[in-house]
Length: 266
Length: 266
Image (cartoon, rainbow over all chains, first blue to last red; front, side, top):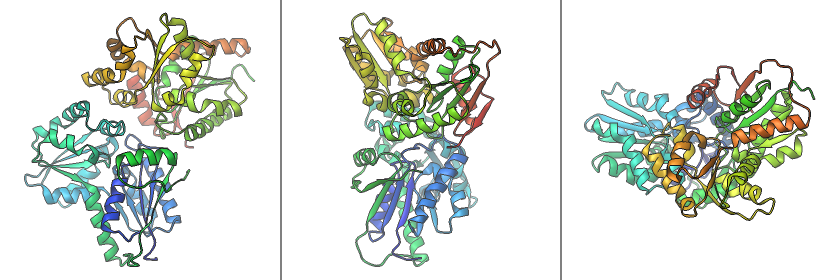
């Protein structure tokens, strides 16, 4: 494997761009190939079988592009599709679940941890399992919050309606006095403010992007795959729907230059 | 063409089941093949090119199943994909736009008509064009209301939050004193009550399903393709994602027996 090969990152849509940003910040010399599966987005209400199929199709595409590592920057795909990818693809494959769970474990004091995500992510039990993997004695409260994604995409992040929805969804988590809340969907950091104001300032919100980027760095160091060419990294974006819509919607959410976006149809 | 061949109906997901019910009611001897593209749902925020591609794939599948007519029971596909289907498929192809527009024209008295739908449907201008086709002198107010679908799917049809969302979305339509409102998405009839209570009892809500079923009957009569075997019709359902999820979610929304559902992967 050539150290100068790119890192492959994929998501069902645009949320994974937060991971691109975090990885690029901590690993500024690493080339990145990102694919957002916007023609089939969202994954969060689809079956394991379908999410596995999509994750494999995209991973094979990234392997064809000679990536040296795959990052599954989508909680639903990390919950439902990553095992199938790891079985088939002989490269390091990182997902968002592990880093998010480990960060939460480091932060919690009262051992009451909350997790929010799509129905697919929560029902898969992936976070619940990752949190308990080392026999941790925890109380875990996992709640599906599927309306947060369409509310973010509608641009209603600051709307009082989003706050009301958050109050309904987060009620049980507040009652159970969690001190740490995993944002188990890459869209949720965009409404961090609302979630924090409902939960209270004392509750730590865990966004996997930074933790995941840190683990990507460690993995490349351990496997001696760090790009030390010193050259400026390039980021190539692919979308399965229209590159124009991808650029427009993506740049509204995050300050990345998405003009270099190509279409890939599966 | 054999008169006893089935009618093909498709939608991006489950909303088109309202059309299945309306068609089956008015044409109880006609066999139906329904496909809900739940693995790629929703279509309402995707590009024309992608919706065309999906509509063509599904239509070819229905033609392989020997359908004698295709009904596009999805507003986004009727807005963006139906022209491509009509160019390729040499069968009667009915969509929801025409019947909805004609029903609205019959009902309006003050010539102020509202249309709500997904962003794809509204931005396509399909309803606006259909309403003005015969030089009708109308005021048309078209508003995208994308959060209605996830709210219905979350089971929040009766929630006060859905009412608040409706008040935000429908404000302009109320101000412009429309007397007729086209429900330009097959999910919206499930929140008819909320929409009606926000708009007021005087505003007529147009749900295309019945009008579309009536036009299907007329088309079969005109082309001498009515099934007059007198035999009991069968309905075969296909879904592109899990048949179990299709049955569970579908039967929560509508009283149809969906146990006879097969998977079709494109």
